[in-house]
Image 1 (cartoon, rainbow, N blue to C red):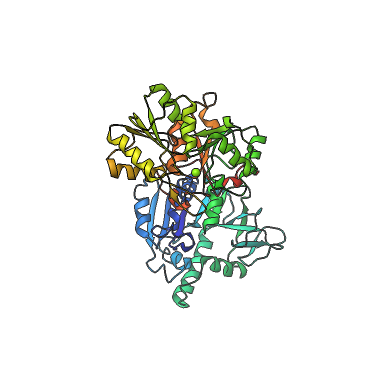
Image 2: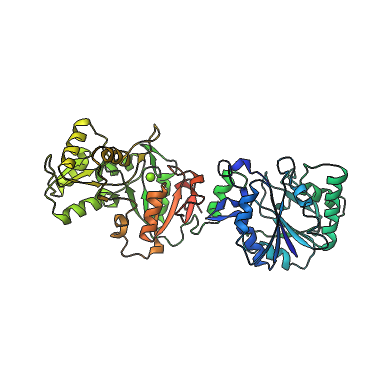
Length: 498
Ligand SMILES: [Mg+2]
């Protein structure tokens, strides 16, 4: 038994993700789609897999080059732009002579046991079908009255007569493989029709009674055909390490900007998510690197979008800064930040000064003016060091990106040649470690929209993470990223909905 993977297509509906790589190398949960299929062939004990490449063929060649536990035969469909997958199958005709095979399209994330279930079934000719699903976009099948034989396969089959969705995995006996390939050769060589689909060949042969296909119901197994970003979002959730039900999580640190709000506007479903989490006994903290406001301001801001919170539940980047300054018994800090930040440091008994400062604290300063910049530089030129409350370069707003501390730090560095000696806030693990001493790492979750702050914070603290796509991070940035969250969701509205 051999495996055949048709992977020549362009995958244009997944651009820009597929702008310079084939669809089968798009990642779901950090694993390329092709690897889901190859793992399924491995689990079935199939040692030889033919892969038909086309668009970005070199990337696939490169990807499979290091595989040594499978015999991979690459067939390149150089005419992928002017042909369809029946022509790809045609190109495999010599490799598939006198052999039974399993055939699949390369754009699926599937459970490891899908191919094994086809191979272990004693019946010779099978279509893997999910009887529990009806999807407009997918190929559906109909059956004879006794349910034994497939009578049709098409996208156009209506829900009232459909048995279920084909998941684009087929098993052919030697005889059926020969019948299928003879038909494909006829279509390509005699009728000169290069733009047909393999599924149309199957339909023709099934309807004429020349292909005795039977259904293998795989209802309950995980599979997603990834054609577009909506499919990808579903696959991300279904194949995630963590799962949308956040199994085992006892405490969640929820980022505010980009996760619950954009500027002051609520992100739909945010308040309801917090409510659901609390109802399940998950302890909630709200996390922000924004140092322009006091904790009480956040309580008010959250109340404005329907979320009740106490000051104890608000964790800000200034918390770490304050404990650093208190432990150092500093002689003085100049605050390049808001009145709220200045007041919160003064309340802790820290000496806030205009001149002869030991540190210049740079916060997210929504009250910035030139006089403050000038005072900050005077202190820095006289020897003060920079402390930054957080690293974020820009802040999401209703007007799009606006400057945050990182942009300000670049301006100071260009002016006085100094970088911060410490940057607090996310992703420094100290931001949350003092709050999670009673939990095991698996019970702690950080939910946020930024890879370099929220997801990296989780990584630094050794806890779990959920990335939401409601803020800064676009889905494309997650493929090949240096940090990978335990789950990717469009927004918090997709969590705890079961
Ligand atoms: Mg954020």
